[in-house]
Length: 146
Image 1 (cartoon, rainbow, N blue to C red):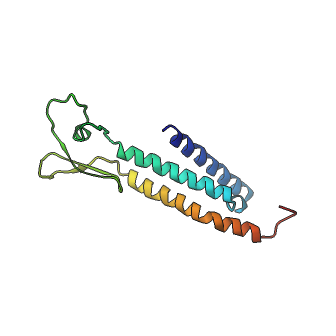
Image 2 (tube, helix red, strand yellow):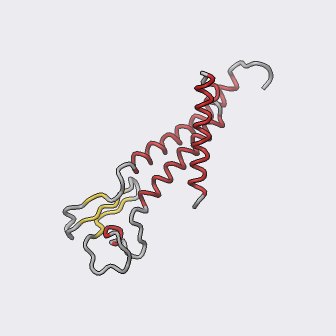
Image 3 (cartoon, rainbow, N blue to C red):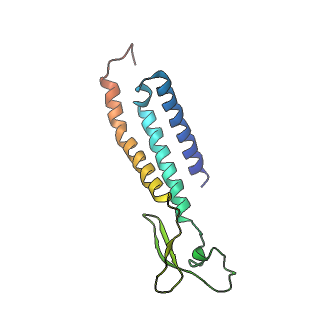
C-alpha cells in the first residue's frame, strides 16, 4: 500500500527533472525518449490511483456504510444521515438527511474525479506514445553510433 505513493512521488519527480533538463537545454530531445514516456505513464497512473483512493475512502467504514455520512464510528447513538448512492467510477458518495433521498450532498471532494481522469488519461497517452518514440529515435539521424 505504501508503494503507490512512493512510486507516484518518484516518477513525478523524475518527470519534473526531465522536463527541467529539456527546458534548460531548450530541446525536446530528452522528452522524446521511451524512458520518459514510461516514467510519465507511471506518474500518471500513480497520481490517478492516489486520487481515486482518497475519494473512495472518504469517511471509510466497512461494517456500517451509513457511518460514512455521519463521520462517526460504530458507537454513534442514532443515525442522522444515511448513504443514498455510492459509485466507484466516477467516485461518488451521496448522503442524505431524509430517507427519500432529498437534500443529498456529495461527500467526495470536487478535485478527485478531474484528477483521476486527467492523470489517468495522461498515463494512457504516455503509454501509447512509447512505440512512436522508439520509431522516431530509430529513424532520426544522430551523431555517432547508438
